[in-house]
Image (tube, rainbow, N blue to C red; front, side):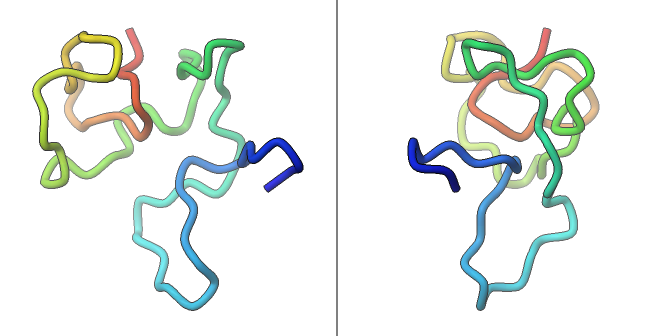
Amino acid sequence: ENAAGVYSGCAIYPPWAALPTNNVLIDPKLDSAYKLKTTSPCINAGDNTKVESVLDLGGGARKKGGKVDIGAYEAK
């Protein structure tokens, strides 16, 4: 985490917690609006069993590919 509270990975867990197998610890490749770029490793990398809404934060479809994207917005 930097001073502004921005993280460099798609998921953050405390050091004592076991990391899930779909955790992405590399650059999520976000654009200036914090949405996933088309080259993001977070696209289709989420866990469909954790989806609680059919819409993402922007009001679009929550799942557009085989798996949900990691993050608040689904990539286009």
